[in-house]
Length: 320
Length: 117
Image 1: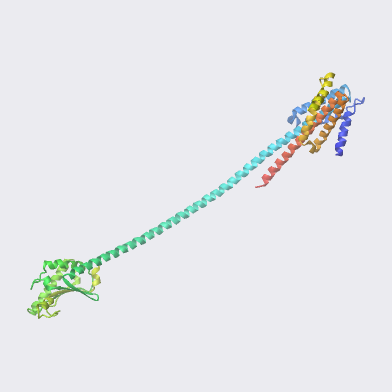
Image 2 (image 1 turned 90 degrees about the horizontal axis):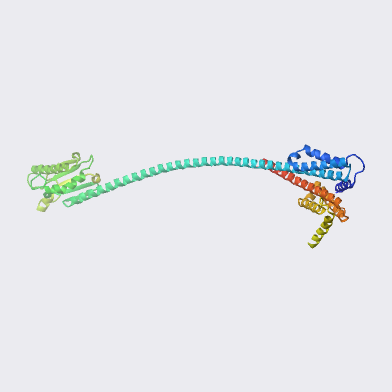
């Protein structure tokens, strides 16, 4: 504040001092010349040409006044104005320089921001790429999982198919069993069917199969025996089916023996004709030796005249 | 308002009567005062360099007003011219300081952003 006051006093006093008779330039004029010169040397002529020109004009007026009347109040006045105008010109010039720096800084700022943004974008892109890659891997593992799933499904389907096959087989077996059962049932209409453990014993009354003293099967008997042939068609065993012929006690033994043998053979032939393998069929004539009833009456004798078919394993009947 | 008008008329009338058309102290007074106000609005009082010239301008305006009262119109006109030159220098210095500060700030920001992130 003291400096301010003293400066004011200095400027004020010098301004008010009115020149003496000396030809020496006033301190004001000297100062004005120096400031205008330094303004001319710097950037001011470019940044504030109008201000500099005005300062030069004012200095010229001061010089003219000095020539005219050294240290006159006019010299001091124009020196003062020239001095201030030159300082103003320099201040304007500095302001312009600062503005230029501001512009450069702003550009640098923007450029830096942009490069940072580009850098960030690059980083982002890299991250995105990584993301895409990991997504790709995910897709891959999904595909693998899909493939495994499909294999599993195929395996499941195979299992189901197998099961269905088994089911079908079972159904077929059930069907075959049913068929055999039906065959036996139809047999029962014309023959006595008995089971003894695994064995099946089928007894045909002789009168149903043959005419008296004949060995040719009646056509009605053939019709009735056909289901039996079908049931035995797939019979496979080392233990053969035995077909036994039996007679009553009337007539000679030898004749009865031959008659029972021939009738058994006749039944066997019919079964072979119906598809039963010959190797599982054995025909035996038993004659009158194994009666199942008394030969003393007609009913007993009728029961004794018979053909028995002995199936060793009845379970094999159901097999197709 | 009426006071101002009478003042202006009061000042202008003697000038017109004297017939000095080249230097009109009233106009010069208005010019220099306007420059002082502009300097004050720019905050010249807070900038040490420009505060000096602003103060000078004010003092010279005060001196000019006294001279005008004493009828020293020519002298007063010169004081007002110098006051205007001082006020304009104060404005220029304040502006230059402003621009310098802004330039510094922007430079700092550039430095910060280059360091940062």
